[in-house]
Length: 505
Ligand code: AMP
Image 1 (cartoon, helix red, strand yellow):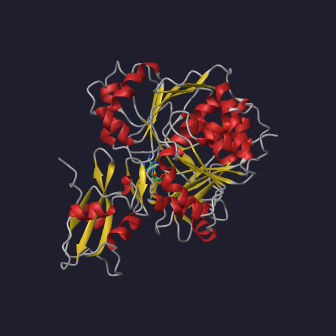
Image 2: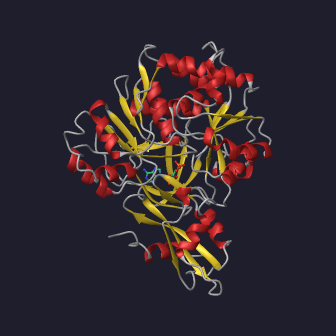
Image 3: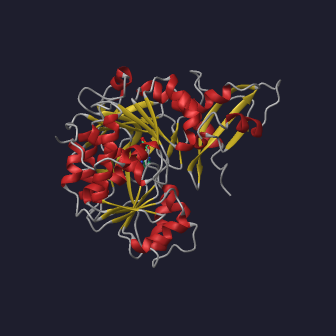
């Protein structure tokens, strides 16, 4: 019986001996190995009682086996629920309590700390998966046959839940169907001209839509290969470039590589395509990259809830500072969201998106879903933008004051709540300030009560361990009061202006 997305993947798979992933340690997984390995894990999941629609929550380090587990979930009918490796046990407790997975797979090194959390939230089974073909999940799968009768899942059945940060502090689980993922990956294969000859440098995390769906699903449907790096490493990327054809990265990848003396035309001669997304690519980075390498970076725009929405063209002008055109098969419009008035070309407003890529709603949050996903299918992205007279989409800002640091989203409210709870703090405002390396640096502006002494070091030490590392402020600044408008709202735009040069020079 077919599982919609997995069936599409297998129907397009090249010869069984073709390599799909090659890891830095030399381990290779072929397309045949992917099929058998995912079958073995799917059998194990079925033995653990997984039935169609069950969630499998996963917080593991990046490895080929983590991708086998993703495919195994598709085949076993489960909903794959990847979690950022930086999340602390307190954060994991929220996700497990909210998603109620039957199985939680974690890093063997974290099992002791996380078992109690899993038990508290009623998870039936905790398994482990390490980076070196180790862990209980792999041990249990080892003796299995390598064949599995896939559980039937259709186009509209859920394939994954990916949590996004919530503006109110609560993360929301974006429900993505087999059809959402399949349609977007098929579009990207064509739009970006991926073929079986492609070898992608993959240095992104695989718990996020970028590394998991944009990169992995696209390469799978093209029948190509991936060179798998645990994380961004400019030396390794340059070493691998002569064997690769393409790379997908967040803007930090490009700024880091530009700092490397080895980046030049010869080093990139074998590459056909550099793609950037997840955060705005500075126009200077685009220009500098072109000067050094002769390649124009292709910038695209997407989000967890919608997969990819727009892209600069493969042929034709890749315009710096824009995110290109709506992808084929989907609609982008600019509105005044309150009354759904569609604005004229060139006017700035809310970016709304409709198409087969748009998610099914937020997990167990019908109210939130209703606020952001219209009955007519348009999703209100929260990003402000315009469409210029050539049809290129520009993103001008974010409605939600989201901070994007190194490609990761940080919602200020969550960090502010932690800081406000500390002794000696009256209140705080967290903003994103332009940072050459991270795109934006999380920055906290704090009003002290002047009774209990507080300083930058003390606040950072108190937050460490309470928040994932990427959410920690890069700087904590002190002011007597926060700027407010007549409605009493903190004026974050004014704060961003005041501290605009904080990380410069
Ligand atoms: P995420 O759900 O983590 O993928 O984050 C999605 C958000 O990242 C979007 O709503 C945008 O605000 C931002 N984003 C993604 N790609 C771009 C881009 N190319 N330029 C500017 N912002 C982007």
